[in-house]
Length: 136
Ligand SMILES: Cc1cc2nc3c(=O)[nH]c(=O)nc-3n(C[C@H](O)[C@H](O)[C@H](O)COP(=O)(O)O)c2cc1C
Image 1 (spheres, rainbow, N blue to C red):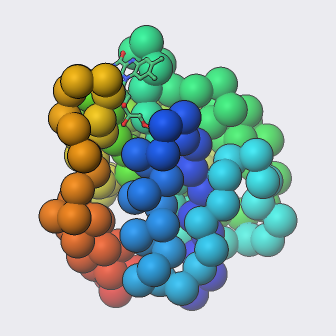
Image 2 (cartoon, rainbow, N blue to C red; image 1 turned 60 degrees about the horizontal axis):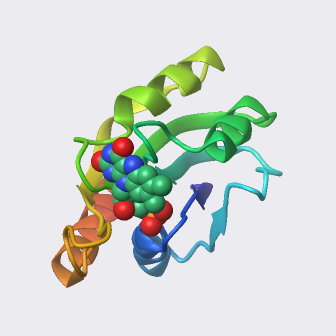
């Protein structure tokens, strides 16, 4: 199975999630500044929100996908919102790509809020999530 991991991070929270996926799947996690170069069955795509919106880098990355992607699996961290799923889904579907109905989200630290998040338990949970996705 061909798998890619891309993420955007400002303060490292989503990067921790991306690296945890990478550890269990054995595929390097790369930033969204690195476009996909080959077709993939699964694209794990990590994002967060900054003033309620996903970064323009994530929007650009999705817009510029020019390979076949079987499905996009969202993962995210944020201080307050439930997840970036609905925002990313709109962008993915605008590209006529398939958005998986499954996602992973957890709290991410932001100033005094949610210190040390994602924590070890979040990282264990995203590893289980990633294994489940690739075994489906
Ligand atoms: C400039 C800025 C704006 C943010 N705005 C929001 C927001 O509107 N809603 C929210 O839930 N979290 C917000 N956050 C918190 C981040 O979503 C959270 O810290 C997230 O885990 C950051 O992920 P990252 O470290 O991968 O960039 C904001 C963080 C920053 C730095």
